[in-house]
Image (tube, rainbow, N blue to C red; front, side, top):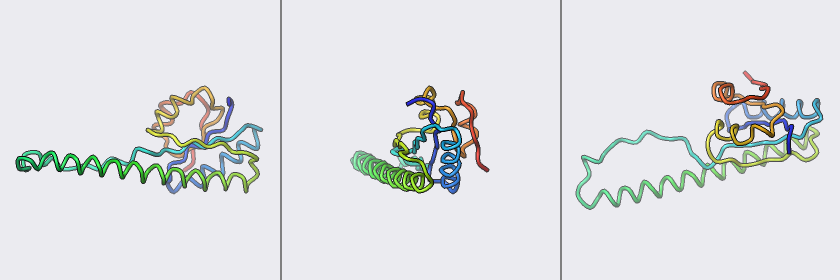
Length: 143
């Protein structure tokens, strides 16, 4: 689907406004509305390098635990993204968008923009730096 109004939501305090403005733009332009949300890559948390402090045999166990923790974080982020998209879709329908499309995307906003660049007529979002650097389409930014 080309020439879409894309609402880039990320669960921040601006996501509701992004959804509302994307709905407005979609109706004003007569363009389909799509909602890509980030999910699957939880925020990175700085972890201390304890490699010099770990006793022999403990390292493998700790690495396994860290791997399981990363997997749990990814599952939580995926579910959070799914719920975020569901709420945004319901809001769009209430506001008059007949069939808003939605896609849950893994990775960063920049990666998503790069992949979907040819489908976007207008991008609505609140993450300015990344969007401005990567986008070749018009952007409606919220403040």
